[in-house]
Length: 604
Picture 1 (cartoon, one colour):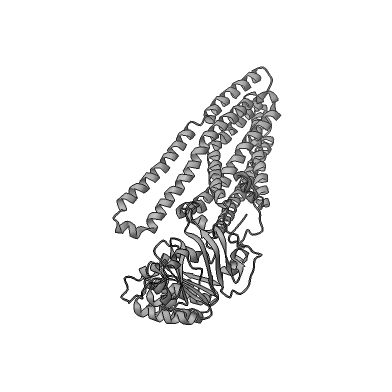
Picture 2 (cartoon, one colour; picture 1 turned 120 degrees about the vertical axis):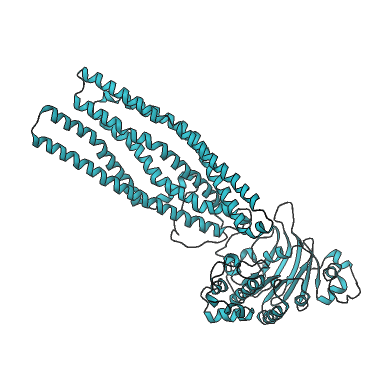
């Protein structure tokens, strides 16, 4: 399967069959053969001994009826006690194996899904709701655990709970199989109808749970906007509606389970079996001990009849969860890690050759982009909102692949580079900075976790962040809130700059990365940037004249196309689109000449 990223893990080297939920689950269980064998073997042993109990009770009754000595009765009772004790020990071992197996399955599936999510492309994640993915990785995997224990354990108890009593009844007298045999056949048909009605409801439950979780995650993530817009009541009603639908699905499940027929059939079967046994007893076909054993064995059938109501629900709920998880695991991604691709130091020459791209098939964000950026060159990218500036830079590190044309770095198509090698030499600082709920030092060293504290502090000084960091009570060991909510916008951007400086990239992309920084701090960072960018290819998306002027070249985008390219002075004199960007600045614009250049576009 194509994967943008792969990672070794505790389950690496294992293969799983993803053709169906049952194949996938059992391919997971195949990697724990001793636990599976132990659960099955101990369960068979437990039920064999458990089924033997009523037969021995009948034998003890026969000893009493025949008036044998106390020693004979004591031996029979001791034997019965040993059999029942053996049943208890075997059942305990079976439960232990099943519980361990269920937890290991849950662990392995969570690991597999997390690695799969890391390997999905940005395009895939753009289409997903985070809350729903979290529900699949947490609640759906928990239901897989419950499917093994107690679900499949109950299921095996149900099967063995029929096989063991029916076998002992046949050994007593084959004629006694008439009623329990008919009950077993009727049970199969009623359960088939039961599972057919229950399965779709359980699948809807798992899907609706994902919707409810996604709604809660969105409201909490956007709590600042919710409160600013005074939409708490509306969000509460929205969540309540989703939770009510989730509740209604449980009510539907309860109604289906309430009409479960096998328990009613069991009562009728016990009465008919007793009547059949008494008839044979009066006819001299069986003795009293066999009748007592028959009644005891029929009562054992209550256990599988009762367990089946829960086991099928748990197994089907687990299968529903498996289907949702499989839909993530089997989803193809648009990017390939290309582990065998080029791995080398990047010099930084970037070429766009007839590049077009659209987030949707019928809409193009970029069209026919042709431009060459020399290694070590600083290029500013400007344009009106929606002109494709950010999209253009996101193609450089293969966040997305172009729909047409190609992009090369050092003359080699991006698709031919090893993705890890390529991205490790590119740093992208966006306006919307993402910080983790970790320490300041860990956030700065995210791309270089092995960096020393001295290197981290040097990068922070270069980004003009050392001052405010040391002002925190714990300094670089201060834990910041999720997404950096405890920091100002300028502080977040300076931490992002420090992270990029520490990474020491060959290609540096700055997407309006100083928009939230005051003029004095910006001047400090600009001086640091001029030092850091030496020998590096730098792409800057900005409308700040102070940053644009010291760029070697400027690209002007309009409507997803390259409208013009040149130096600041050249574009002021020749590009209407460029002059329009700076019309609000208090600067003297030179007379416009050669406007035709914009109509044809400039390759640069």
